[in-house]
Image 1 (cartoon, rainbow, N blue to C red):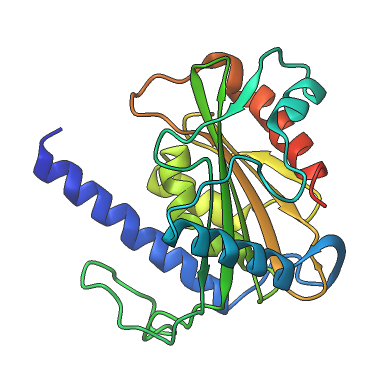
Image 2 (image 1 turned 180 degrees about the horizontal axis):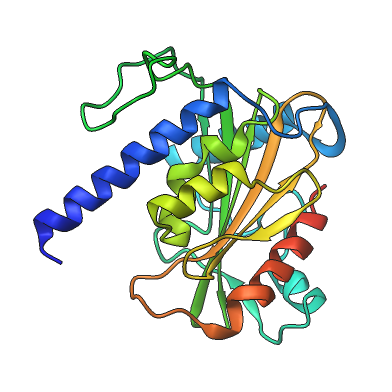
Length: 240
């Protein structure tokens, strides 16, 4: 594949993700208020502190909310030692978004007539943690919460596409066949990404994405497929 073809393919996937993500404001899945351990406000507060820490050139190795990959691997029956990995500058990071008003569609997108513009995006917050397993495979968890019920999976479709290396039809499948709160699913694609929907305390929506974060095309087979799904499920169960 040429560089131009790769850029065109990347742009197409980004456009498809934007189109599917628009469903975040027009539909919801599993939208009833939950009684989970974490609230949107609590996640946003932690994400904001982590972002401020980044701006101050600080660093943190301990993943918040009780997330411990080593214990999750053990619970999933997978041998290995997990250590925080700040290889990209930080092992733990956070970000927040205040939402966005409706936007014009990218020129590459052929949008449905009932959606004349990209719908508004709700406020959201995310916390990411990275580990190395046995000094090799890098696993990254991204916890994302939003104020609007039932929309978080569509909201993070661009991240899902990158994590799972998903094709266009697979993005559509992920959007329409989402895990419900309490469920964890292996994502279609390479087998190196899994997604858990988690009950949130009060209004909003919460998802945990776990994937092999790699520079090469090679995946660690011990941490793909069902073992990765089980690890994600065990990790989500730790949230507090």
